[in-house]
Image (tube, rainbow, N blue to C red; front, side, top):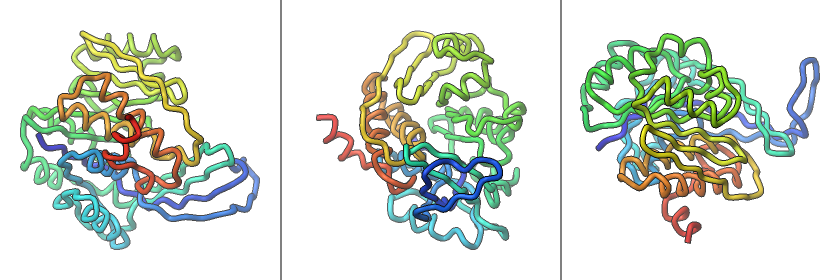
Length: 294
């Protein structure tokens, strides 16, 4: 089983502040760091660090070579990363003294995918393989349709949630990995139990992973249901918490790990990630996660 992630690659400009800037306000930052990020690349790195054979697809600009170096460093197959004549996507991230963040995205090269590129990339994958997607790239409806035709297992993190997702045939999604805000936006509900019930009603054949921040995570499908509390730590930067959870959970799925064990591993990996600054740099390796679970 191979995992293909056609996902975003962003240069993250991370500003440390006392509080998130309000409209009309000017505030000085105490620190600026530039990290590799993007939900796509974060999740690919999490998969790779968890020990999965992962292929990353997507677009970078001429300023995006650091992503190719990152793939080389972590053993990620970068054959499907293409360079286009525009700026690499980037994000401006504010982090306050309580480790809460606020993110402004610029799509750049992430919005330059074409049908021809998608067809060429998917040609190398088949029904035994997993496709992971987020909503920081274009062509999402087309990618879902083509992967579904090939019988691939499609995992979707519908983030950021916006009107672009209306065109995606969600009935073709095998695994939803989403937080309670996104779950609420899909279902129109606010209570986690009601969100889970509604998602299973809407997508009865799907596996649902609903993360609840400090309240843990819930897994549900048509036959089983599990709850996973968080591992409490002192948070430094929560930017890649959900992406780390997603990567590690899919790693567990690929290994046919029992769902409770996959959830526990994912929660532990996330707890380590939030205790460190940055996105890609904060994601732990599998050995570290396993040692922490002993």
